[in-house]
Image (cartoon, rainbow, N blue to C red; front, side, top):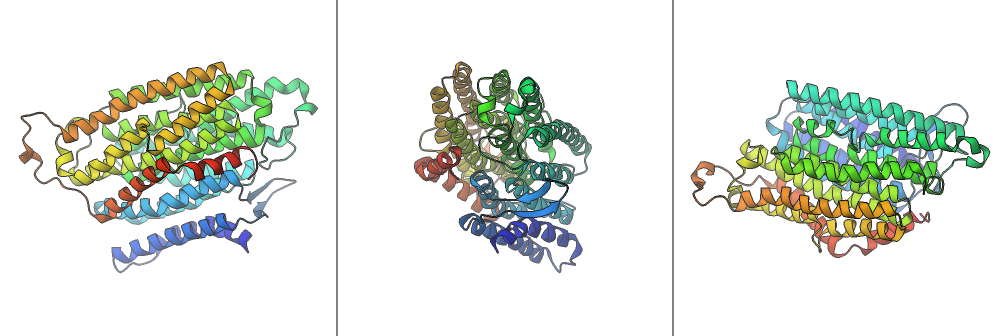
Length: 491
């Protein structure tokens, strides 16, 4: 029975999404209740599945030989699926208020809901073919969300997103083919599946393929130089950009690289090779590049997008350390960054929704008029900086500890990059906070007299994200214990 639930949690959002434009809704409220019910029920099913984990897999499509689209729950799948199932109902609730005055709501919520199922498909994939199948499908269902407003900027952004994603998928496809040919199995097995002893003359070729596949999957994780699509995608509605930057797309890229490194090629094969140093160098450079660009960016959502580019490479830096502690740090930052960044993006969206302002220099005095929104934004800023007591500190400390314990000289350079990034994060986040709460002395508050906090549909998700940042920051041990179990191949 539990195996059937694997199919249900992927299919239900698809069916629910397809029904949204087909049903003649009497009013918008009923449609919103239906959408939230579909998402909430599916999230409950996901958590029931994770707490009653089936031992068997569920095959959706069978091809030839050992090639199939199959779903399975292991430790790594549980983390990503649990994250997605926890955040999606809150993001959907927020989007009801944000999209109230937007056109083409039905197509928007159709693709928005379907993306939930596709992301769960990536999380629960049992082998590299299944993950690649859902990975490609993710590009198809999210492109209409990026182009939703149909403005010239949105069309260009969607085109860039599509080009980069399809190009990256081509390199990922090469990696998949080599795993099929050179691997003992296509399934994800902790420690990897390569039969290197049978092909001793092809070691450098396989290392090259790993780097290419890393960069291919890394397109969605916005590694340099394939990251320009991410700031451009900020033209999409905030509920889309928040999920693009915090949960669905970018985390799918990071998750795929975890699978590629620890479950397909294997760290024993990769650690200490030129391939490891190559990908680690790329991630370290991206960390510094992303936060440097955020400092100079004046558009609020694009500033947060560059912050995402930097923080995603925190996760990949943990992966490229290629030790169990490195994976612990990567998983910790994947969870913590998702909560911190969706919170900050939703705060930015609330400001844009209520005021129409989208540039940092336009936010003077907003903290006094929107105290709840900017109070929450300030907490997310402190968390992103890594202030102790908040979740960002836990994940950054885990990454630094993994780097030190690895003994890898280049990993020490990565620690320096983390420190530089923390300083730059303080600059680009606190600049916003200071403008909001402490405008210049002659500032006239009458110019923003109509500015106010949004309603409960936006504030409830933001408040729960705040609770999440505090709970993880103050009581991280249960999560870290789970991550250690996964990183040692015991779950």
